[in-house]
Image (cartoon, rainbow, N blue to C red; front, top):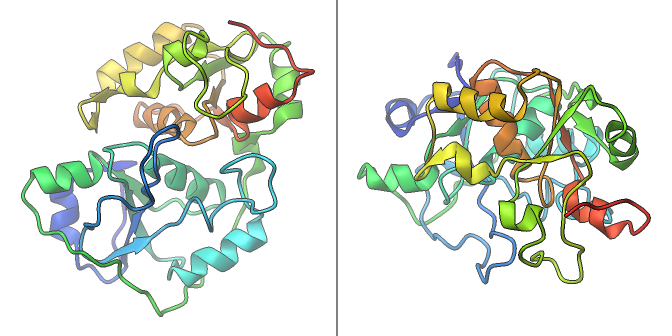
Amino acid sequence: MLTLDSNLVDVFWLKEHLNHENLLIFDATIPKVGTAEKEMPQRAFIPNTLLFDLKNVFLDKEGTYPNTIPSPTYFQEEIRKLGVSKDSCIVVYDDKGIYSAPRVWWLLKTFGFTNVAVLDGGLLSWKKSGFETVVKITKNAKKGDFEVNYNEKRMFRVHDMVKAIKDDSYCILDARSSNRFFALEPEPRKDLRGGHIPTSKSLPYAELMMKQVMKEKAVLKRLIEEKNPDQKPMIFTCGSGITACVLALASEQIGIDNYIVYDGSWTEWASMLELPVEK
């Protein structure tokens, strides 16, 4: 059985193990919010890729806010359709380097699947290395047997955040750009207030990248410790729960797992007009 000893793998590791019998490769590409991108714009995929559809399948379809986590029962049903079994090994990528793939990594871990990694550099690094791409997504007819073990402690909802901003024992980090954090530019979602959650600090996810790949562990450690010198448990937030998971991935890269993702993130917080906002 193929097992992973890191939360990140590079394209050379994936090329070597591309046809392993228990390896599943997921494309989690989504358009960046506020852009004119269309779904699946790259029209090129790593061979053996299956589509992990964050925008239409793996979310709470009845949710008020975008990208929120689905129920454990629903997640188990849909993830089995992708062939995920107890002995599977999963590598997930997107077409932007590292952007939406960590959301899939976080979802899987939250629902109890741990043998998963993000492809460092994603499709961009795969192409840059000259490796083969294909024009069609793979269809997997084999149903998996993975059983969900939901860890609700990995996620906060809005009522948890209301308490957290009054609790000095947490460090809240926001993965959006600093311009959005300080309301120096409008939010990409129409009519959404600008600013940030009180007591939160800005750590844009892009600062964790060097071009399309994640920075070295020593640099990640320094960047995170600068924001959280007292090593408090961290809460990660962003626009709608996607890039907060990039901060989560970086944290686990340096051995920190005492973090929580605020699932509704800024879209939920700013939409609730009774909640305070700082700029």
